[in-house]
Image (spheres, rainbow, N blue to C red):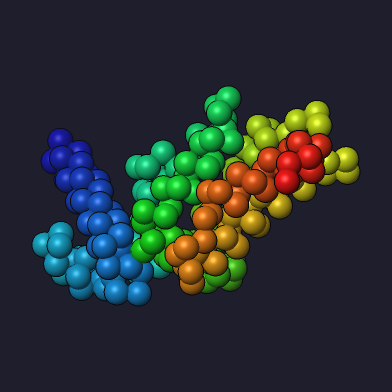
Length: 195
């Protein structure tokens, strides 16, 4: 029985660490979120953080997974009939958490290395996102020659690129630009008819 209680306490402590890391990164940004500060918020040492996560990169990868889960931003949630609106809401939400957007963007570059702890997270997340877009954003009137997989990759690439532009210039209207792009790709006749 003691092992079960000990396990439950470990899971609870891990969740507490993730919640604190989300808060610290959201408030202070990725660059200013040190293991020391996260540990202080939780009331543990930086070594204790590494006991639960192994490395700073593993902690930050777990933070991104937690963010997806907590905010309903798991790409799998987009399978609803209102997938387009859900996707745009994710983009709107990202404008309110610049520290997490910076973490996501920086970690995605580092995760290009197959040995990086976030590599599998980004591969899985990207695949789920593209599958969801391909399944839910296609229409009978979309541009000829634009198969669902290509459409999904274009939307994903534009979304990722807009995040980078927005981090440099916060006046970039990510949701508005993505809505216009999706409309143009899904309904080319309507997009060409509008001024």
